[in-house]
View 1 (cartoon, rainbow, N blue to C red):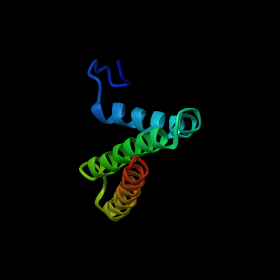
View 2: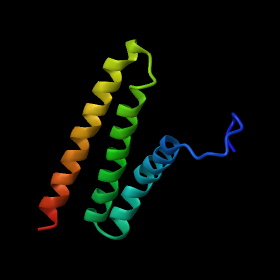
View 3: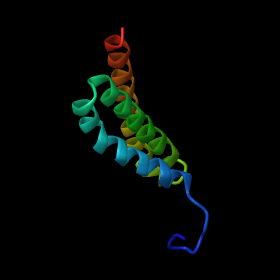
Length: 91
């Protein structure tokens, strides 16, 4: 149950938790298993952040839209960079 008394699980909150877990776990997974595993988890976490930033545009005040778009764009570029490095390393 959340603060407002809802029993429903908010998908945005779940994505946020997955983002935090991915960012925390990626370096440890990279050191424990391989760089590719860490890159895969980091790519997923950055994709989740990009989703959250675009989703926040619907609810944010208009003066925050430019900052949110910039943040989403930067995260999307980092996500693509991680994905490209992952693809290059896995060949």
